[in-house]
Amino acid sequence: MPLAERLPIRLAPDRPSMQARTFFSLPESLGRFAPFFPEEVAPWEWIAAIAPALASVAGGPRPAVPPGVHLEGDVHLEPGVVLPHTATLIGPAWIGAGTEIRPGAYVRGRVITGAGCVLGNACEFKNCLLLDGVQVPHFSYVGDSVLGNQAHLGAGVVLSNLRLDRKEITVHAEGRNHPTGLRKFGAILGDGAEVGCNAVLNPGSLLGRRALVMPTVAFSGYLPANTLARIRANVSHLPRRD
Image (cartoon, rainbow, N blue to C red; front, side, top):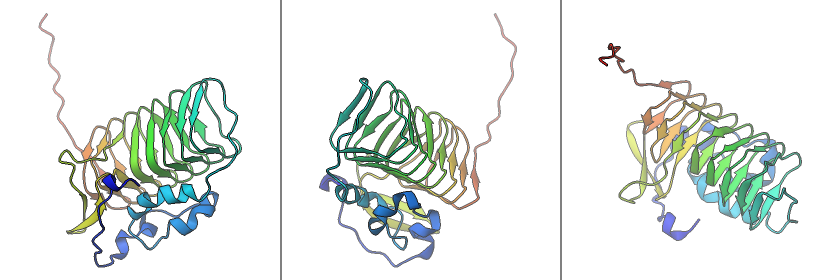
């Protein structure tokens, strides 16, 4: 990760609920990367490990792709990857077996996906780790984030990864602040977590396993496992005056 995106980490006392194993399990399809993603560290530590994990498998043969798919750098496609007629794939990147890349997808470097993911139309992915079965099908931005197995983003979801003041991102969870050492940090989604259409996860958001953020919510902080975040607004029905 570029030095401009990472600050020296200030170690905090260990909190078991803030360990990666609480949110997700690395699948067998990504077993070759297991040394880079230990389960006992804070989940945001996995973000910084994406670049060195990809460096460990660099140098493979260049894959054959349709004429409209633009390749740059070291891009590895596992068997069964479905490619569209147009997309941009910039390495380093590792795309897992059976993943579907849809038209207009933009992979912008330092991306690892597990098996059976969906990289949707007009979606951008940058410095992120997607575990098995992640679905990001339409018009989303995923940067500096980790999405657990079977996580799902509805259309138009944005994982915002940079504070307006460009300062270090701090995770607010369980009554305390957790310094991350990161200036760019989108979100952590546990296994089976979901985010509804046009919602925004603000920098440093954490969603536990099977947590759910409802559509159009601007969410910040920590949503525990099996918990739902929603906003109820009143909608008025008025007669037209024309």
